[in-house]
Length: 437
Ligand code: HEM
Image (tube, rainbow, N blue to C red; front, side, top):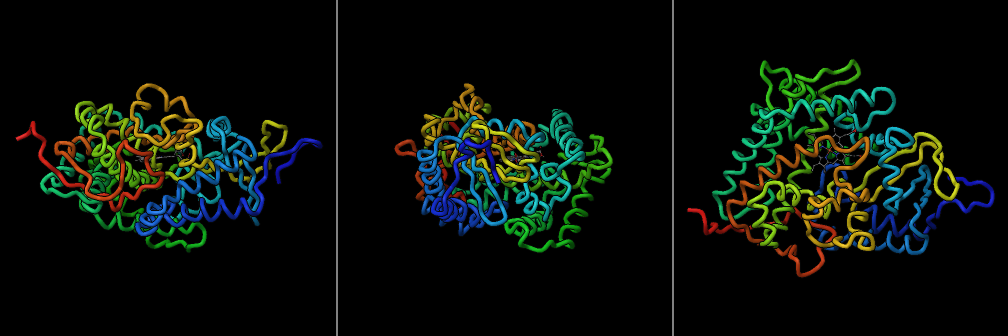
């Protein structure tokens, strides 16, 4: 329980009606959509109702009433601190691996279905070695021109068949991007290995239920064995080659780290497909994205800001932490960074509900710690550049044709962008670009 010196008011506390509103209007729609793997029907319903806007309104109201300090929510079995200000967000993200751990209890329960031993859900001494391994393999290991070329080739070759038809649906886009993911993570020999994707997604489905779903050890063993086969090839490709080149300390299991990459990459097609939707409705930005890959990457980042695929960033306190105002929180308190609230905080961010890729090029987005689609601080995503490279290469290929929105989702500049988007129903029709034969 949070406490302060006598006379200090302590943190603002949510009352039961606040908790009910947060649960029904914020938490429930988020959980229903699937925190680890999306449930398409729930995504469709959430977008139709724009449930993220409900959650934002609830948090706005609480901030108006209680001020910008964090809000303490106590429910049976768990105390949760909800962050409402950029300053607190910065502190929590920056002090990760110190007073706060990214291996929060609920996150660990969800991810341990398919990546036990992953850096993100490791506490204690092994955490530093596993983070180092990830940074080395995804940073230096994958920095060579061979890897960039492999990503570009995979993206180009897999996007090509999508150009031969005049209609583009999520199913076709996702299927093609999945092949890219297998090639980039496990090498070209994994291109057609749909079983490995199926295993990953079944276990992610279990992860959606956190600790409530039993562990399926046999499926996990099959997933790990199949992954190991690609890592053990005489000449592995993609990131498997970077794994081979990266020394692993005794408590680092490279297969478990690779599992996280394979899982996390599945958010990339969602962001890329929504970016294509935004570009189809913003002709000026589309023209610029066609000509400039750096700008196209900024469009992918902007899509992740507008509809963050990591719905919230979770931390647990590792020790008693003191907060401005003189109160303290005990170790083991959960902390929530509500991404879609911070990213669309219109009181703080003038471009909250607009598509403005420029903010990723002129330093405005970087300056805001409350904008963190790839997190920030010591647990920031070490795969960010790989995602941007791959998604931009894939989209660059698709942008050889003119795509027009064929579904009802309104992503144009005429009105504020919806806070919830259903990528699964997005459809495009294509025309040929006038400057191409
Ligand atoms: C659009 C795709 C992706 C998004 C939005 C994303 C986002 C994130 C976020 C928000 C975190 C931090 C979570 C936290 O602070 O609790 C994270 C961590 C991480 N991501 Fe990504 N990620 C993506 C793709 C990838 C890919 C493709 C890889 C690897 C190739 C990767 C590797 C990692 C790793 C290893 C961590 C854990 C870092 C640590 O434990 O310190 N991510 N990612």
